[in-house]
Amino acid sequence: MCFYDQQIFVCGDHKWGRFRAHCNKEYRTGETCGMKLIYEASRVASKCQMCKKYEVIWRKIVSAKERVARWETESINPVSTDKEKDNIAAWQRELKDMELMKQTKMRTI
Image 1 (tube, helix red, strand yellow):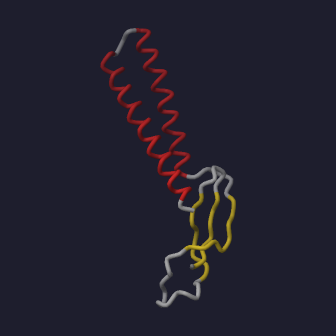
Image 2: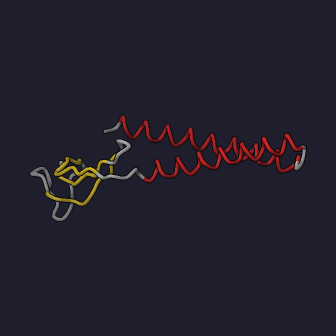
């Protein structure tokens, strides 16, 4: 039960900051007990790194879908169209994994 600062982002996610104070359970010199309690919480006016990465991947998916639609209407680049569809599927799987990671992190608070 050692005390740490905490940063809370606009998206609702949090990040542990620097160590602030030892608790009375700590029995080793220079060590922490392993439990984290909030000493001071501060709000940050930006999104977390995971949300920023999520937005980047989402923009990639949107632009790739636009390219595929254009290529299919023009009937050009059949090989590139298939590759781009594979990329879209991979990015969508990555987004699902990121959402799952975020949900599990929010449950452990």
